[in-house]
Image (cartoon, rainbow, N blue to C red; front, side, top):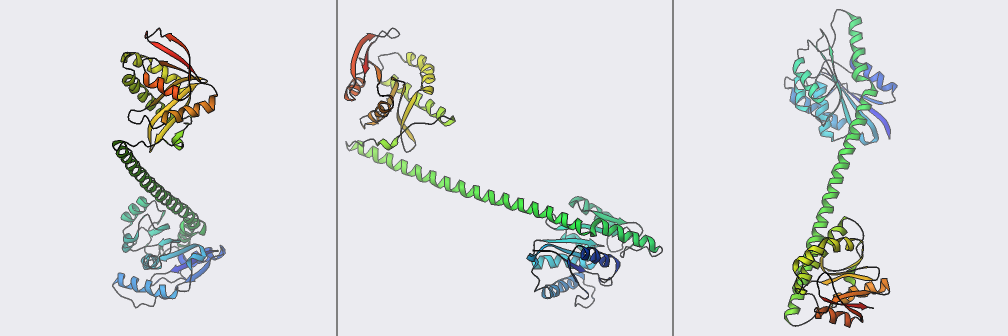
Length: 391
């Protein structure tokens, strides 16, 4: 990529060889820039400034048709007087995104083109310029944070006309402040970085939105499939059919926040199941033991049976001692409990369970899963008879 290109856009009676543009060209030539000076816009003088600038910009588009602005790291428009308006129009017509403007004594019409999206190295103006009021220009530059070089007691040419040395010093001040290549290059790099950051942010936002849309679609699809499967299970139940449990739906939760939430969900199932299935024991007994069982379950080896995001059963043990095994009402008889128990058998090698003798369903379940009675005792806390089982 080439370093840079400088295009000189003069005023109507201020050529590219006049001081401001001449020394700008010298500075950029020393900095190894290619320079294109515009000597003639190919437009007849007219009182209609907008028409003049528009036609001049269109003529320049034709003249610059062979210039590939993308080949240059920096493209600088040094503009004087009406050239400041022409330069803005030219940028819009070229649709190039690497152009930086240097505005020497702009006209009132420039306000229509000043905005944060433009890359402008700075503005220079005389305090006595009859073509633009310095006060609104100060306000505009302050708002856009643009460097403004004010040359006191000078007009549109930035020349006092009485002291050549002061005129030369004024030109030197302007060139050093906003006409030096390093100023425009620094600004160009800053704005390029900002643009890249904006583009990255927009790309990241778009990617996040696309990801969110995909996740939403996947969630909706999964929810739809879950609803359909649940409906199919319900229909099968009504028809007297049993949908056998699938071992693929058994998983061992990993530690983390989601696991803590899952354990709390399991404990709610445990509480409701015990209150319903073991109604011979007062509800307050299960409520009283809730926290202790929750504590043990949080450190136990646990397996969960889930279908379509719904927990239908779980089992947990501390070493060989079975802490809990529960299947939600309506899903029993499908083999869920046996699948959970098989996972604990494989992991532990031996298991012990305690069952109330009044809980005939639990007794039958453990017998079916090859547990043998070891002892019968009376539980102190409930006064109920319990059976100690081994596998």
